[in-house]
View 1 (cartoon, rainbow, N blue to C red):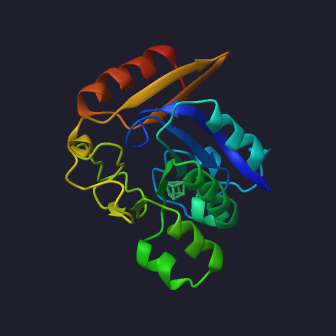
View 2: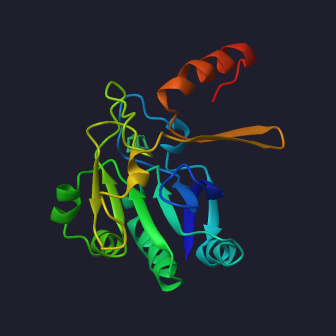
Length: 201
Ligand code: SF4
């Protein structure tokens, strides 16, 4: 199976509990104002990657789980469900960020959507709303977004959800890769750095 992906971060602590393999799909039909990843919206572009090659990367790393983001994972539900199934078989947890509401996904009655939900431990749903940034729940972009614990693997009362947000900045050759969501004190520093460096990230 081939997946159309925008990028991956093989090991991050900025996209869910523990160390996680994060994968952004290429392509999203939604248009949230202020979307953090506008370059991931077109369905053309990104890279076509074999599922087996992604799974092989997990076997070489010490991760607790995988996180699927967008682009919109449910617009790639068949591939995302297959990926999530492989992760569960390896004992890895699965976290998915979606711009849809859980109710909308459940009402679709689409086998691939149902399959992806069935393999998901944590679902973060709802469109990102730029005017409602969330600085109190770690890893969550805006206050309207809900966290659904679809299995017993994680709990809402785990203190990890209350810690500060995490922003990671990586330099890959000539490219700067940023993921996560900044905590309030980091925002001023981050904006200042962007102004000084002229970075478009
Ligand atoms: S669902 Fe995510 S990727 Fe799609 S427009 Fe909204 S924020 Fe952007």
